[in-house]
Length: 223
Image (tube, rainbow, N blue to C red):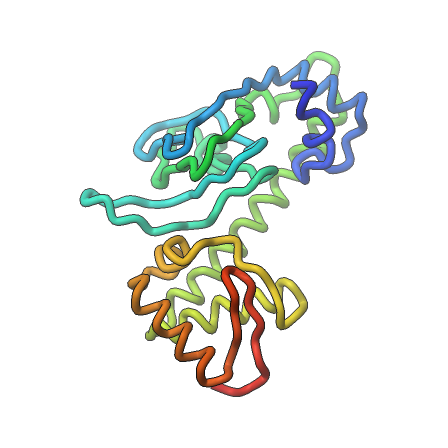
């Protein structure tokens, strides 16, 4: 745990918590670490869970898979981000999505009850973390609403431009980096990868945007 202390103290979940407070809090909630290999299932769908995770290192993805293995990416998972908290906080809830390791990963697991229940020392850290957790849940809800807006578009072009426009607004610049590869982006937007790549090429040829790898730059031309 000491290896990740400096990483955790800067995590949004522990915003406002001092070094001493975090030390006491970790001693109270007794989190556990777990390693996953690339391609492994970090949190399977269809199960109940009483804990949520923080990705310490590596890269993962939160996705829904149907009976035939078709995957719809909900969001990428990067170091410092939390996952599974919605299901852990709702007693008896069954996970409807899975979390998968896109590379070798390290995860810190925290039991929701131990985090939200006041300890015998009545640590003020518990209240701060609860407030932070509510804020993170609200932020995820906004992200989900944003995805619904993209998905509501009728064509691949419209979905792409809705997504890229939102990324530009988030970066406050016409230039930005997308943290998904082409297949992940296609899964996220629920479109065919080949059709999406062809549409990106057309948009670049027509002068609406330019890109190299995951780096994009939008132009001011109306579509």
